[in-house]
Image (cartoon, rainbow over all chains, first blue to last red; front, side):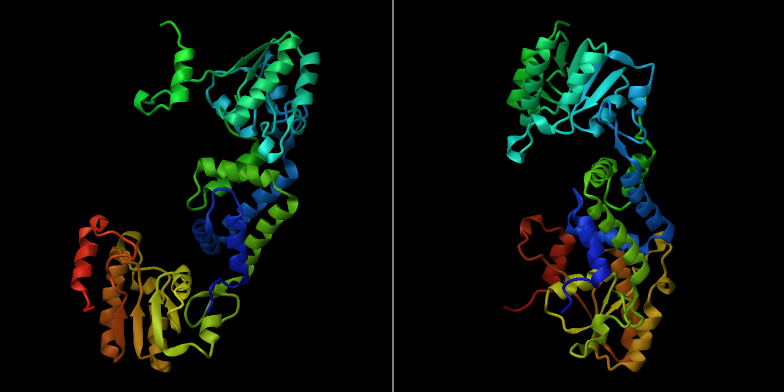
Length: 200
Length: 200
């Protein structure tokens, strides 16, 4: 009985299944799609993977992904150099850019403190952030980490580290998501929303 | 404002997003995973894609995917050559193999009749099936297509074509899925289950 595919197809299914968010059925579907796709499309996928591994590096200043360091944001003279927004991952930079509200610089930590996964402060891009505070004219650090246990722990750690350095440290507001429903808000979110209430 | 990533990363995100079942957020997550993964893992993905496109072909006999034609199932002397199970896609062969109940041969049509997508009988691997009936000692054809409109239309087409050829044509039973719940069965499935009721 053949309970697995012939070598090459099974290897491709396994390779796709090892990527995040792709299960065995999804990997099988993608593998057969690639098999049936025009050669150019498969070639494009192969080349993009190779290109990313060769070209993409991390910005020496902020730790964001880029092809030339410093990255486009750090090198942009129109950005406000007095504010640094600290995020966990490069994709968080993109999320904040999409708001079109923020004109300052970024700093990418590369994760959050997580004792369960053996990630301590020294594994994050924190020393480089302190360096930037000494040389740049930074007035405010906006800590924009994920609102979960790891993000909270890292926010507390950073605020203790940064507050003595004569720089304003702020964090994103917690509260009800716009378009959300009071009925479905969890207790912690709702008490944060109460706590952070503002005059209308 | 940088609303898209630097060239190479955005190209990789786009390439992943063009695969079936992967949305923009999933593609972004996978692209960053590949970026951070060890070089060997990215290389393994690249090689599996290249290998599948180079090595995998279709079996000249049954139309299943294989690396050498005829495929392992067609070439296996222990399989029962009097029965052919007709399926739509190579992955359906694997689904039936996993039951460990079927010992006969297969025939992969490569799809089902679908006028909306411009797929007619001539676009399917049907002529080759008729050829096999002339040369092989086939006594039964099990039509195992998907229980949807396209599968039904193709089953009807095949049964009209095959019945005059002195071969028994059967199809998979329709009915309640094992572990299912009568309350949640749709009307058509339930009436099929009634229609196909068996003595206990």
